[in-house]
Amino acid sequence: MVGGSMIHADVRRRLEEEEEERLSPFAAKSGRSRGRLSAEAPSPMRTEFQRDRDRIIHCKAFRRLKHKTQVFIAPLGDHYVTRLTHTLEVAQVARSIARALNLNEDLAEAISLGHDLGHTPFGHVGEEVLNELCSRGFSHNEQSLRVVDCLERDGKGLNLTFEVREGILKHSKSREDILAAWNLPGTLEGQIVKLADSVAYINHDIEDALRAGILGRGDLPQSAVSVLGDTHSARINTMVCDIIDMSWSATGLVEGAAPVIAMSPSVLDAANMLREFLFQNVYEVQTARDETERARDVIRFLYSYFTANPIRLPDEYARSGDVERGVVDYIAGMTDNYALGLAKEHGLMTQKP
Image (cartoon, rainbow, N blue to C red; front, side):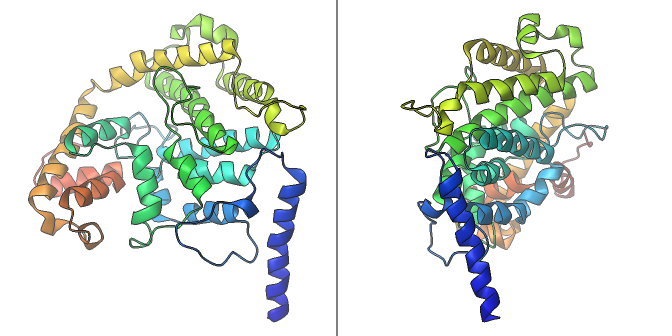
């Protein structure tokens, strides 16, 4: 058994040495992590970022993502994107870019898998309503950090590394520009996830809107299509390849060049155009639909009900004594169907969207 433990520890050391030797000088190295909120002994066989990835995958909030809306609330078809499939697509895009740029693929993956853990039921509609109701406001990126720091493991949190926590907190973007320097993560891997999130949702939300009949293929702005491509795979390929090409200095292979994660002006303009097109023709249209109004009613009802009846909160959300905080944490963690069922159980008569 002692011999086995020594072998296991050697696995981790070898992985850390490989990072030092193989990765770009600008990559985040797991052996040089800024550490965890609470110090703990290292894993015998995994690097710190691999350990974070595994903790996220095995947590309850990650499993609930499979029943949370991305854009379309409780769609009838099996092929619409959920918050879980979106998360997996972000991880795939981020890993591809990180690998090509000789950066830390494990860190990019861990941030990707954790970036939406705090998202509400009913997609951004749920987030908007909670932000309106909560006295301290609400944003899913801050809630995602709260999930991994405070809510998982019966309030103990996952105790993730600083680099993963920062990437989760800072993955959000302004509406105007997906490459805006606002709230930029300190690691290049975190910056990759920030872009990979946009690459994933711009493209899969187009496909979902086509599937739902909200858009036709001819509706997409042709100036953007001419740059990015006229199919899902072509657009992703164009955007990913462009990010790699424009960020090549991050590999450390360009002498004297400062590391940067970037897109070319033409691809960035086209991506921003598609994103704004989705806001105007899909997201804002979707928020006016009947099922979206029912979702708003559900969130408002649950917030009002549990604020007035804190004794009904599960113990894990009541223990802090901060009623509003507990109510928001409880609602934000719900899946779409659980929120609908709970609202009906407590007196709100609502049809399933």
